[in-house]
Length: 381
Image (tube, rainbow, N blue to C red; front, top):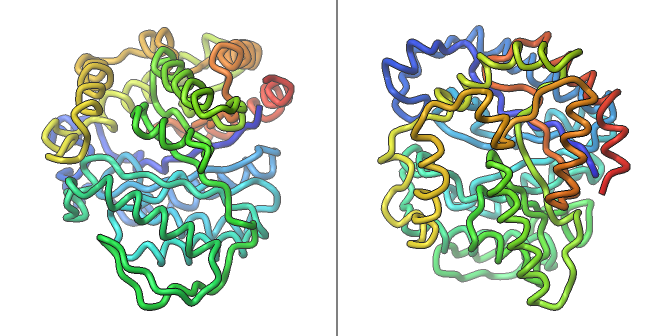
């Protein structure tokens, strides 16, 4: 199993009172609550934590994209990835991921990622997402075109990376007289592509198709949902006549490592509950803009995710559902090895910084995970 450190870069100075007052951390939370001086300090801290993970030997470091939210102040993950390409040495740099339907020029993403791959000497992992419902309000994008724009942008980016230009492209949503990117990616035929999702069957089926065999990442989900997604991938792979390798499956979840189980849970409780109940909260009308999901996808989200988030999530409930791991190094490694045996994933995406968690806790967790957990996980699978 390979281990990655994933950072959301939350604005940790926002208060619970402000989030309660505005009933959201997304889209309509006034940006007057953002203090640029404190934000600048957070960027320095967070980039330093990602650089530390590289020094500690993590297989990869991960960033992602969200807009107009205190949940994650990383609207341009390519900028963070470019910075890390110059200051890190060995870890893969995973952009998990760029929201393809929100941009009018997919060629720009192909160029950005090719640049990062060059700057990092071929360490980029490219992640593609559609973006959650609030992003469509933030970008004034038509959610009913989300799926079509996503697939077309993906196909065009892959062609831009792999076909020699110049060539002309005419599609339903994009048209270019010249597709001829400079630079080309270092990794040939193109950087690895990973697809984060919360369990959409359409996404799993698309990833598992033999034309792609993309690594599918299950994110922020109870263990029962993760198992369902991974089993679905294996089932689709078998229908296509091949066996799914563990490297095609990844599991992303928050975790904390401390000297003892009691210390880990005492330290993380307030931060985990604030993260899941406050920073993840946004109005129902912003979750599913009309046309954003298929009928089947909408039904699954209502039955699974929305039902889960309707009630207050305590740390104890999150631990029971497998949505977070917290404990001593022994407890964490035993839990993760057991979960790997149950789920069969080959990539662990560890979010070792959770919401308002302070720097000293994050650094301690990173150190303990790298020295007393990660070596055991490398032998699992």
